[in-house]
Length: 173
Image: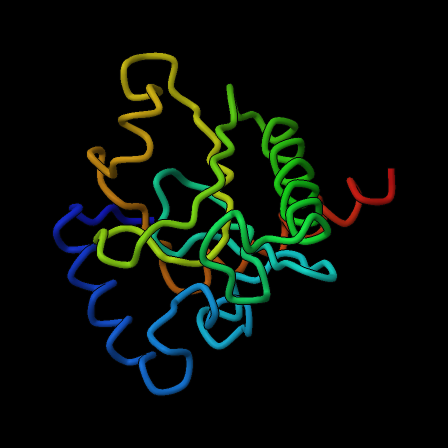
């Protein structure tokens, strides 16, 4: 696992957005939901959402739960989609806690695309936090001020497979 600076991560994201323009209208979240990006980081799927290991993570094991439909505001999100997003986030948080996270932040987002780290597409961040000091503050966790976690080749895929198996077991409870 390696850590990028916030500026390096933003540059990589901008490059990625540009390559998605033709097929997904520049929406990284639509590409994730369609498994067109980082398919090896796929963790779980429900009727209305997918759960993936975040390739630009605030912390190791950071999950994204992404609506399959391109919905840009909460007013557009039907109840059944919201319920699916929430259920996958809840299951993911329980698994992350069981795997040792001291706390798990769940944040539902869908912001204007003009913000550099945001996407106008309904999604939920499920972020495990292992620290118990100032680095655990939500403003620090969600700002990338501690850097951006990137997985080495094969590392993210192994972790995604482990989390997928754990989520499958959690769903059967």
